Amino acid sequence: MTTPENDTFDLQDFLPYLLNQAAEVSSLEFQQVYKDRYGMLRTEWRVLFHLGLYGSMTAVEIGTAAKMHKTKISRAVHRLAERRFLTRSRDESDRRVEHLGLTARGQAAYKDLREVARTYDETLSGQFDPADLETLRKALRLLAQMPPVDKAKGP
Amino acid sequence: MTTPENDTFDLQDFLPYLLNQAAEVSSLEFQQVYKDRYGMLRTEWRVLFHLGLYGSMTAVEIGTAAKMHKTKISRAVHRLAERRFLTRSRDESDRRVEHLGLTARGQAAYKDLREVARTYDETLSGQFDPADLETLRKALRLLAQMPPVDKAKGP
DNA sequence: TTGTAATAGTTGTTTTTGTAACTAACAAGG
DNA sequence: CCTTGTTAGTTACAAAAACAACTATTACAA
Image (cartoon, rainbow over all chains, first blue to last red; front, side, top):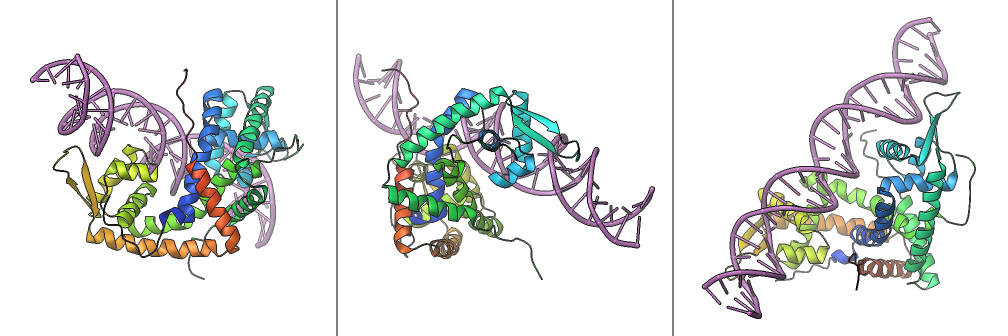
C-alpha cells in the first residue's frame, strides 16, 4: 500500500458503500441463527416474517411489501411449503392467486426468530443515543423509500 | 393480507432489515453506471477504488480494507487484469505476494467513476440535514466496525 | 537441514441470484 | 363469443457468490 492520492474522495464516506458494509456486518449474527436453526435463507425469513406479522398474504403482496422480485418469493415460498412452514391455498374467485399462511410450525419458527430479532435489535440499538437512533432509523427509511431510477427512455 | 397480529415487533424498524433495504436501493443507481459503462461487478469497482485511492496494494491488503474474501478479490483482480484495468507484479523478496496497480485505463475508469460516486453521494447526502448526515455516517461506521461474532466454541 | 505450520493466492464445485420467457387465469372492448 | 392485453405465479438458463480444497512459497523451530 503506497502513494496515497487524494482529490478528496473518501470511500468510507460513500453512502452506498458504507450502507453495504453496515448492512452486511449487522446481518451476519442474525443470519447465523435462522440459517443454523432452521436452514433458512434471507428470502425465506423475510417471507416468514411477513406472514407472521401480517397474517395471510399473497406472493405479490409480500413482494410489494418486501421489495423482493416475484421469482425470489416463488422460490422462498416453495421451500417454506416443502418444509411445512407454510400452506398455500388457491383463491376461489380468482384462481390465479394463492393465499399463503403459516402452519403451526411456521408460527413457532416465526415467534422464535422474532424474539431473536428483537433481542439482537436491542443490542444494536443499545449502542446509540436514543436521539441518534431515531435519526438513523428515519434516515434509513428515507433512503429505502427512494424511488428507483426509471430505466426507460424517450418521451 | 388479513389478521394483523402484534406483540410489538416492527420489521421496518429492525436494523439489519432496514439497513439492507437502504443499502440495496442506494446501490442500484451507482451499479447501473459501473455495470453499463465498464461492465464491472460490485467486487470489481471496489478493487478499482481501493487501488485508485491507495495506490499499489496486495490482494490481502485490499481484502482487509474492504472486508472481502480473498476468492472474491482473486476473481475480481483476474477480470480487471484481463481487461487491462490493472497490472500485477510479483514481489521480489516474497514471491507469494503480488503488487497490484492501475493502468492508465484503470486510472481513467477510476477517475470517471469517482466523479459519478461523488455526485451521487451528494445527491443522497443532500436529502439530509447536515447534522443528521453526520449522525448517520457515524452510526453506519460504528455498525460497520462491529466485531464479527466468533463462531468457535468451547474454552 | 528438515519437517511443520502459516501465508498469498488460485481453482473447482455447489448454492443462490438474476433475467427472461413461459403457462394459466382473468378483463374488457369489439 | 373472440382477440388483445394484463396479472399471478413458475420454470429454465445464465451470471454471480459461497465454500472448501488446493498449490506455491516462506517462516521457524527441532
